[in-house]
Picture (cartoon, rainbow, N blue to C red):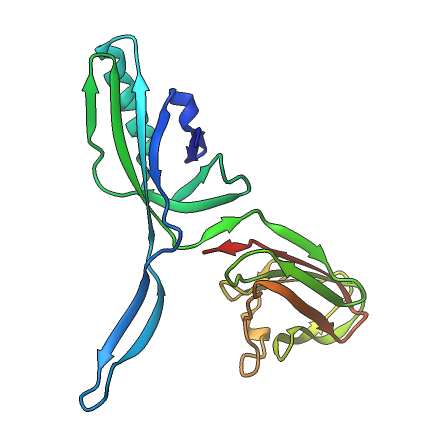
Length: 242
């Protein structure tokens, strides 16, 4: 690996050479095993994935010990954040992690050379470049290249009056019931459950008893707009990877 980028700044900016790294192929699972007396084995309760820990060792060179420690202060300011930021590697273009530096960073120096190891605590899944696709005649087949399910966003622009509209994937669907007019826009975020009509929150328009904020599975997904011919629709999503 030649470099990595964190908080919108590349390690190349500081002249760092990446000596080693640890990027787990699969993060740990939050599995709980519970023994039941009188039965063989255990019951398994799966509660998602743990954060992914990524270690990077860097080497730096400077003209003097004073310059080295001046550079260290700049690097510290770069790596310090109060919340999670994007972390990407040049050997995996188009994908990134979201995380934050974990713990203190120890620095070892010898004359004009120094090294340190930084540990990032990242969200379990790697994120891919955002994808977009338009419905044609109210249907869309999307091939999700990720290896883990991801939640889509929909933007609908109405071309005719409608009393309701439904976006469906198989038996799962999100249905809004209201009086749409030509020119109205409808936005739904299946990850957060946010719904807007003309930039105004409109969760009260949701058929909450039957609607499901569904996810796109890896591979092919068949989507449709029920009550055809009422709007144009665009899907956006970001693939996620184990």
